[in-house]
Amino acid sequence: MTYDLYHEMYDLGRSEKEYQRRLQDQIELPVQRDGVKHIGVSNVHQRLGQAGLALHYANVITQIVALDNEQSPW
Image (cartoon, rainbow, N blue to C red; front, side, top):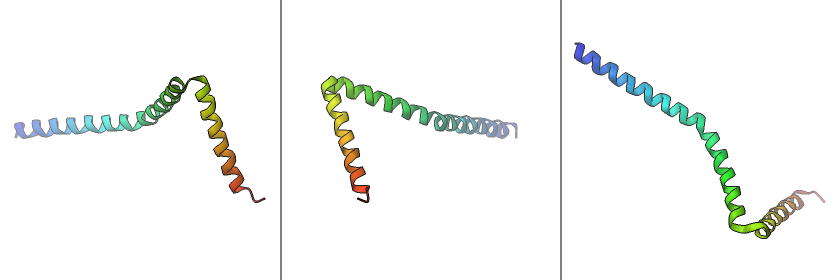
């Protein structure tokens, strides 16, 4: 009886630890995503340099303007 109870308590402890770990992962996920976005921006700058980055942002602005023109009623 004591042996079975010990194993049940051990399994319960493991399950609780796993639940807490998964809960913590869910809490940390948005923070990690923000970090990845920040890393992505700095990597783009490192790969393209100043001129390439300026062209990249100009392309983004051009795409935004094109989308805006498509949605405009006139």
